[in-house]
Image 1: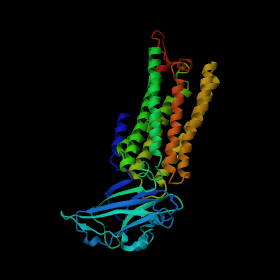
Image 2: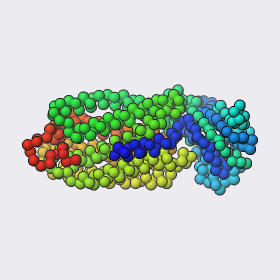
Image 3: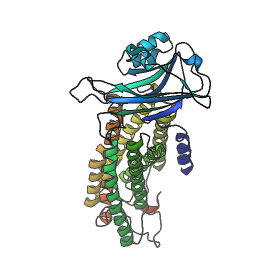
Image 4: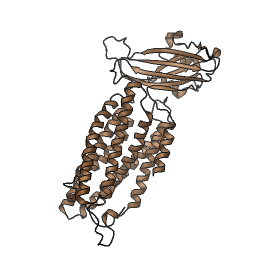
Amino acid sequence: MSKMVFLVLGILFLSFSNAEKFQGAVNQENGLAFLAKFCFDVNHEDDVRATVGRFQLSLASSINTSDMGDTYVMMYDDQIESWPAIYENVQNLECTEIRERAKNFAAGDAHKVNWVKQSDDSYTFVARGFGIGQNIRPRWWYFALVNCGTDLQDVTFEAHAWQTQSSNWEMEFGVNEQGLNTLNLVFFFFYFVFMVIHTYGTRKLGKQLEFTHPLVRLFYIIVLLQSLVVTSRMLHYGIFAQNGWGVPELQKFAEVAEIFVRVGFLVILMLLAKGWTINPGQIEGKKWILLFSSLFLFADIAILFYTYAIKNPAETEIPTGLKFLLYLMLVLWFIWSFWFAATIYTSWSKEDNPVKKGLFNKLAVIYFPWIFGLPFITVMQFALDPWVREKVVASLSLLLSTAGYSFLSYLLWPTRAEEYFTISAPDTMTSGVDNYEQL
């Protein structure tokens, strides 16, 4: 398992973050070279001509650019006749038509690249800022270079997009991410307090029982990892708010760690539904739990890998490959949800102890809707507008996950843990397989 974690982290860290500061090499197709995209907010001022954001671009080339003089910085938005029409048909369009669909086409040579020769014989171009205006709704804007006469060779770029009507805390973020910095800051303080309280409760329970059961230890690791996930995102988005880049490695670590947290918690819930630590006896179906949890793990990792390593940021819709993976994850979620419901009902119906029966009731009432809430979030990705999809999904996912972890922490508090769970120290004088040894 540890080798898989490092492998996934290694693969993901090879790619650049698609941040609000961008850099890379120019790749051209049919005269068009996509550079970056950014989701600008709608105009909130009385003046309808007020800009909502700006885009800054610098280009560099180590070769003579005299034959690249007819290069233009073109700006497209997400209206159907603009970038979507370009991206889906770039190979079937004339280069001149690609230019004509840009929102700044009428400006003519105002957005032409004027190369400047430097003392080291390199060539550069710097545009201090193109203004963006819009009054109907937030929109994705796509920035590209177009040269209909020659190929753009050995050209690199650095770009920066920002909001002009937002506060300093929010200006570096596209509308699709605005608020995530505040969300993770708030939850950082929550998890700091949560971690302190849960650590105190875990230590007190261990002293009380003179033993720390695997359930308690495994759940503690899950809470600790989730706290690191929130802390990493808080640091990434906090730094992002200052420099427009953040710490991409922290963001990617959070994504990978969250996968293992989610799968680990689902395994705990299914084991509890089967009566682990609640009823004595052998747990059945452990191989099926291992199989489905592995499928969850690989599907989640595949989605993450596709997002970072395969998905083209120029795409205007969720790509087919990613849709397939999301639908696959949805099917796995529903299978797991109904399996969990059937399992916990069976355990509840066989239970005679009123306290244990009440515990199965609590687990069913809280976690059956909780497990169904996560596939609901997957469905939302297809229904939500693209300029709010990312932050709504991230917010709901964090809220749901936190609620689930908090409730199990409540059940494992020292004053009630022994009432619900059989997690005391093993009796070395008894024979057979005890509850805590079944894994």
